[in-house]
Length: 453
Image (tube, rainbow, N blue to C red; front, side):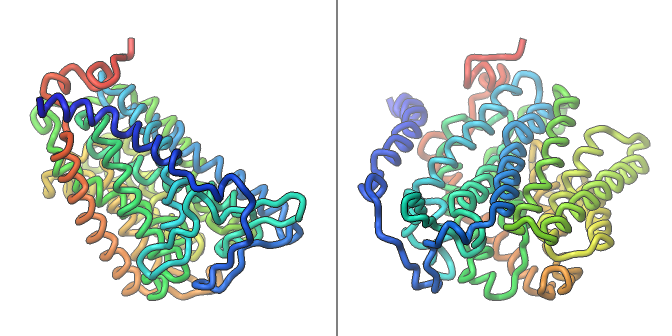
């Protein structure tokens, strides 16, 4: 009876959770509300429409679409091509489900916890249900956020949502081919609110404790990549290795699909980093340029070391190296020169190659698609090199390796500890892993009743 309850509850509870999230919507959303003043941060977000920049808004909308394309379909294709044929559809389903779930959680409370005034450790609840977001057409006023004061708050909310979507979606690659679909829902819901939102507040809110201590993270090297990479490593340990891992070759189904996904990630990253400027200005242009340079340097450095070690360059290596360079330039993209970007990309390609090979063996983790090796290692490399190479002529601030190390260390500890607790709880509630028979059949068939012909 207990196993039947666990199986049933694991399937239906996420549906009830999302329904409850919407049903609990407060009356304030159904009627106009008075302008809100957030005295904790000293700003009044309701401004005249004339204050909004059409150019900045157009760029931020474009950047938002580019970042969403990184996940849908970019990451879905990138991951699906690397798993075995019997798990292609389940991997895509997991990425798509994460995007849908995170969207509703961001609306309900996630945005507020990350970006509303509160404490140095977590935001308040003033923005729950997006109640801080205002648009009064007749009065000619609308709300903005102080991190992007020339664009509507609705655009800022949506831009930040795309970051919140891709971060837990990255973790999918760590336990690919063996996680229960229902367990993924529980894990992502808790992880977004207990790990992603607090770390985003620490680093990106003006009152965040890491921001106050001088941590620099232009577009998410710490908040997105270190955070997801460490969570992925912990998840790989706790879920356990795939059957046959280390004994038989677990060959990817379609590396052409992976290349298409990597290309969408590369293109979308222009919005990821360029959009983090919050405006259509010179800093956004510089962020795009250094992003391209780091990606190219990362792809070539990974390819070269692989060529030397394995005697042959691979398409997967080129794709992985490009992503490694993109990850490492993410925290630095608004602070460094083109020459520094090339150096960051070269180091990231080498460091992440080791992270996905030698370090992976040392850690004894079946991190299926190298989430820690590429995103965790790349994020750490980028964070530390930002402290070393930040140019005050570009970003207006000087970097501190010590401040960067402190931010990275705090994120590693928080992400690892809370991720482990969440996984432990989910495993006790409904179980994390599919059965041996289901894994052998493939998750496409056992979890979704579908398969690739």
